[in-house]
Length: 275
Image 1 (tube, rainbow, N blue to C red):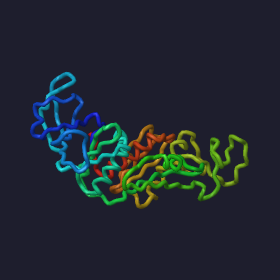
Image 2: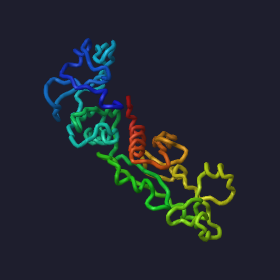
Image 3: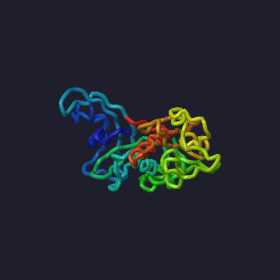
Image 4: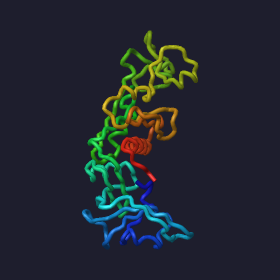
């Protein structure tokens, strides 16, 4: 799938007649059709990759490579094709989990596409791993605000770090004792921290690990996993657990970052290539 809909042009032409034509210089893909006017669901289109040469805003098509024929056309005026997570979910739904290409026209008439190379067993299971307290967790707060269309089941998995006994925090956290406020600390309570902060502070006492990445191997039934970690500033693949990608996002984790991380994890699980 293209990284931006600005790389996609819709042209009323046979794909074999594209070589030599002039297109906007940013164009990398063409939705080729035999017809005029707006795209319509059910019409026959092909998607090809083009290489252009020359200079200036309009450049000549030098080479054409087929991406897919008989593509499924979807017109959804409520869908934001600039949001890759929405685009991916809608494409999976349109193709009903089968291999193929979904061409999607969304808000403002913008057009993009997604190619699925292998069958998908729906629903896809995306797990967002976080720790509590405090409650709600950051993932728990963001989940209702995350727009994920199509057959994708998104579940927040919250690990209670106080499940093995009392804890206290180095900084104020709602519902957790902290020595910064002079409250009583139960005997045997463990400090809420992670491996990185323990090394930094040279801590040697009992610790309740608050890094969500430490708990991803306890998560079952996931096709893709996203977890927060203070060692990452942007969504990044950490590793694969079998075929399941584990993607980390920043500790503050904005809604935009979560959407980006979720898309990255799901596309890696599906083998979808972004160009």
